[in-house]
Length: 312
Ligand code: PMV
Image (cartoon, rainbow, N blue to C red; front, side, top):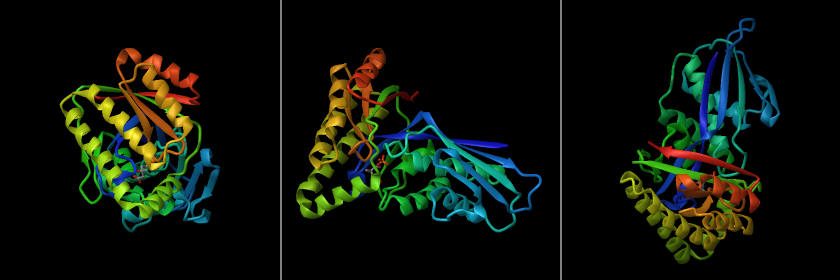
């Protein structure tokens, strides 16, 4: 049996602006993950792949599944990338604890876990950039015009400074960053939010370009601070970014309430994370305030809170 996992992710700074060429920073969230298990099937003919993904109600022989569904798609693309040849018969079981459509990269993580498990099982492990490229191809089918930040951070499994068209830069945080995520419980498909922002940008490009510049500058400043271990100073950049994301139109009263509650409970900074219009928010906290902020988020309506630690 070969098991591979891939973490969830949160966007620390730069969402939406990253689609327009500005930099963004994303971090892995290891407390939730996608898992792919590959088992050898001794009594089936070579090339047989059976699939079981109970979370999304998918089960059957790969040949009979809809090839445009993300799970069959990543399996087919991975087998194709591994080259010609008849593969030994396998059964693939896919599960995930990452909330779906909540800005935590669940789709990218499922793709990365599958590509990793299959390539490792077949003795041909692929490097993170190739795994990321395979997951990106699936993201493009299902999310319109993704920037590629989700598949990158999930495949590399470490903080990433990302800019469209440039080589993604995984980097190390000096020190330890404590993050609390609050889930509004409102599913928000990324493509819808990105499409809405695109319509608004088309209608008023100068204003939206300025918004994207501000968000990108926050991401740029944060990278230097993180590498220097000046963690608390990221807080004001998160607060400023949330304000801009509100002006862009992707926050909601539910997200604003969670952001406000986190700040009042002592967070150094808080903002929505990911596409917005629902999904998840993120608070940067000191170690002492982790529980207080989690409780405050629950009281303010979060259906789930997740604590994660990033850095050394
Ligand atoms: O998948 P989400 O909800 O974390 O959103 C990704 C971030 C966006 O910048 C809104 C879109 C993208 O492709 O970068």
